[in-house]
Image 1 (spheres, helix red, strand yellow):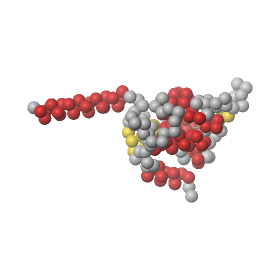
Image 2 (image 1 turned 90 degrees about the vertical axis):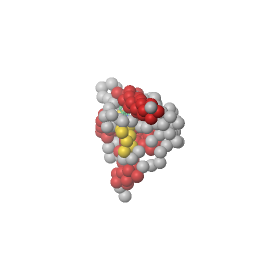
Image 3 (image 1 turned 60 degrees about the vertical axis):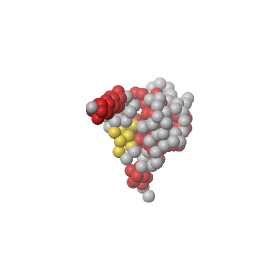
Image 4 (image 1 turned 135 degrees about the vertical axis):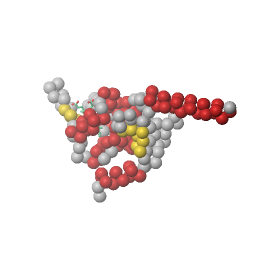
Length: 169
Ligand code: HEC
């Protein structure tokens, strides 16, 4: 009798966590060696209740602030020159994002000369573009504040291997 009760409670807990996972779109659906993906298989962030983030979110914070913030402002907040990516990521898909960064973008016909440079040849950007995406996604979803996420996972071996392969000798 007692065992049955415990089993029932356990089943209830399991059912609850499955339900909670599918009800929360910001929760990663899968992960592989510390890299998280959403239900569509696109990269996403993981943030623990104590604020600890996955490696890629932290790495993205650093890369964003070395390659993008000059134009797009600190923490993705935008500037007078370039739009706030915190807002852009609410409507851009992962594919849109990658293509825009690689190919660049220029609004023509509205009298402005503002240009998003094509960064497809820039390894400091392209080798870390998923990192930058998940960082901005966390900012855009309101899951991460305007902070440097110091509390983060260690760098996964896969990240080290991909970096070596992508950056070259
Ligand atoms: C030299 C300044 C500059 C730099 C550096 C820069 N951008 Fe941009 N970016 C812009 C401007 C200006 C636009 C708006 C272009 C337009 O709408 O015509 C833009 C647009 C974008 C867009 C499209 C936004 C939307 O709402 O459609 C994305 C995505 C983007 N940038 C990502 C990045 C990322 C990621 C980096 C860093 C790897 C970066 N940019 C670096 C100037 C810059």
